[in-house]
Image 1 (cartoon, helix red, strand yellow):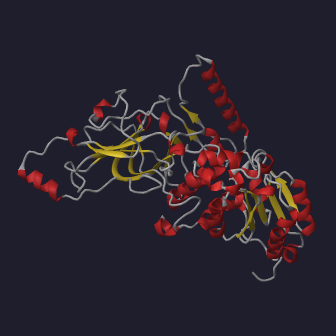
Image 2: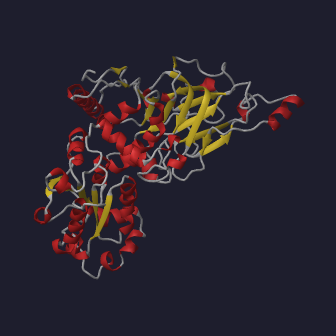
Image 3: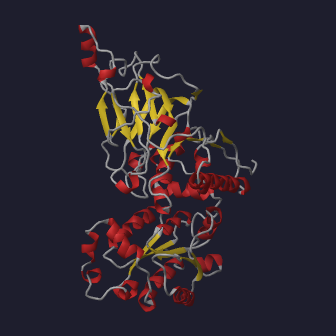
Length: 492
């Protein structure tokens, strides 16, 4: 395959009438230049026609013929309402009896805590710019013209309890229409299934990229073997570029920018929203093909060309070298203040050490991680690089001060399912730079739970943003020793 990135077709239209729009144009040109110069395999991005910033949608009383209306939707994000007023009333006793006997088949499931989802099969028509997905019931099925019609308004991002994550996510309206004559004419047909999902949520957070988008998208699309269309709302090109290998290995086709799309796209099966039952996890009991998290890591190893699937324990004897330890050295918050001392102690014990902030592109950094036998770092998104470690590698999580043992589970659970060895080290107040900012009798030390009770923002400000770490080497050395002994053990 060639190395050029493919076509940007029918770019969203705008006029650079002010500085803000000019900057937007500059950012776009920079991104386009990045694509042009980067050596990716051929992969196309389809971006069609601009959309207004507001979430265009219909009031439940609007008919399909009002698609050009500029009215806005007032309904809440996880709401459905009866649309019977838009459907011709049944007038005969026979028709009424038929309706009473029919089974109502829900299109959307809004009962889950973490996500809303819809699955529609039949005649499905999508108008992305208006953020509307229409379903034309068949008169010959139980979902025919007298089906009790509802409309659903959902945000296709699997974190629906989390207001901060969901606020920027665009609303999608799912609604039936009375019949083919009332539906807008298709301008693009496909026999492939389609998945509609949001790429927004917690942007610029590596952990949430995995837990809210990449892992759920894998479980939804992998079984389709690339024969699927992705319609992405809230699409951010720089994030698509970052994970281009993931996308191009889950679909063989153009990504469609849902928000800018002026086509009426018609499909026979559409999935709206991604499914996630826990952070950074896959539940094989509720997943097509019974995929596991280990299947996801194997997929990531394959698409990034990683050669080590299993750590060759005992490392020293098998490979003739010291076990290699990767220290994720954060550059801003939760930094290792005494990084040099930590490196020196690990090398003295018998590790070869690589310390980095993990800022390289994934193509390069995934190779670095895969070459290592252990990874360690303070709790944070950078530890998500564990997906590139070989099986049997060691994962050491440093838990910051603040009664935060529970946050360790965000990594503990997936680490164990990836068949990695999990070790956890919890720092003392003396190992935290908070000791330099607050007196010892402050609630930060005497009652950290009370700060957590004020909410996530208070917790984050004090214990995740303000805090750096100065490890007590003597206290931490046994954790390093345990990791080293595990990696050099003859029998696991």
